[in-house]
Image (tube, rainbow, N blue to C red):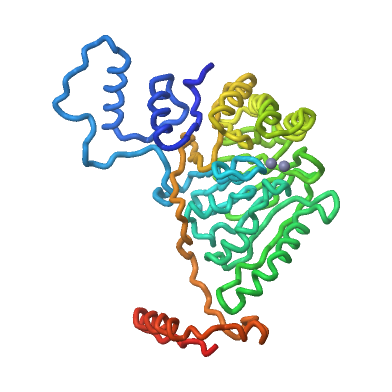
Length: 441
Ligand SMILES: [Zn+2]
Ligand SMILES: [Zn+2]
């Protein structure tokens, strides 16, 4: 097995990642090159020589190889700590898993950040919202979502973008692109209309309390059977092309900008459109489903269902490899399997039986920086104690007259808390140099 040539993001915790990095550094050159400074390179070389010749006497060092106090570069991505180059695309996996909710992996979601400032979300599966928020990107910039198909593991967290991101600073409509269905009720527009209806109480309860201008959508529904441009703004072209998955109405996307091309396959059986559209791709992201034996023993499908779902509705790892061997992207990304220590070797072996090119087995918070010069894969390190990201634009003051209010029966149950609550208004007034009126009721 050519494991030394792989940049497999095992990433089970930082320590494991660093140990793995050291291991890989002893093998053939890794696929991606960390931008270590010159001093670090010298240190690495010395250390490698020592390890390569265990019989040689270990040189006595008067000085430590590494400063005990000075900062040194680390090989992970801390969100918002790095400027994006004007010619660079950063892709962050915000969901790589399955319909089964699990803390380790949300369902499908990939964020693409372009050097021109544009940001695009491809699929927003269950659980992906908290990953997006953890990146601390002002939500005003997270206003464009491209849905590949309407399975919950690919759009189930659209509500967190609609409601939570709207409350946190997106004061403009949430823009959503997605396919029509074979019938109108199976299309993206019908799904989003139904979502807005579902949040009727949520919105009514916020009127006159906070700025709710973001509680609107702009849906762009298009023919799933066509290969077509569905978005073209600011030098960015996004195309949709058909996919084959479950029933009619699944698509995949390509994003082209500044001479770079990223392909995102939502779920699909291997298909001719992906091969054609992914030609020349810098990064090709495609589903790679849980292997059939694990679908039976761990995912608890019947053998019949596992064979059908794992090989005919989705792309089995062997088929993923075959697709990538046909496409030959600069770098292939596999997602849509539970990436555990017991499943990963099997997935890798199956993919490697049909594909020997550059590969990432994706997991949540894996990051790729793509330029003409190179593709760098790392893990992002996030703070789980997420608060709202900074506002890109100020919130608009609201009017108490817009509040829906309570019925007399409910209002009558209110206790008099003015003794303890009035001082909060006074303290805020003193701290901010303004006067805040305590509501009489
Ligand atoms: Zn699906
Ligand atoms: Zn799926």
